[in-house]
Image 1 (tube, rainbow, N blue to C red):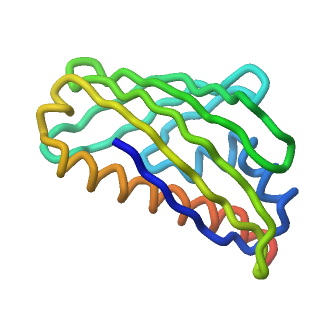
Image 2 (image 1 turned 180 degrees about the horizontal axis):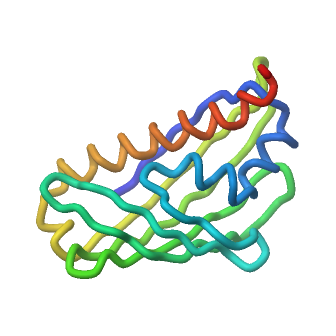
Length: 150
């Protein structure tokens, strides 16, 4: 499955970049995230609980950053296992550019799932993936923009 999108975040590019590399911000932004530890240099370990259709699972996985161009872009890759529910693997190219109202964050995601989750059907999974991507970027924008409003 592939997803593409972009969002304007009301902050300068350096601020958005710092938050993209912050375990604290990412933990708040990832829907269902119970724990996120690590650093951009060494990678992150995550525990995420999600319900996809009738399947609820706790995913444990790792995320690494590569192809890093400071304040501009990186590739984020990860994989997680949800036990009998299955697995998820994916990567995203994240790019930042200046925009009139702040910073435009663009993304291209490629993801694969297997196990019980894959048996739910591509329409359900694609819809869920779009919903989670939208929720992530909504949460991320809120986390980045909130300090500026305070």
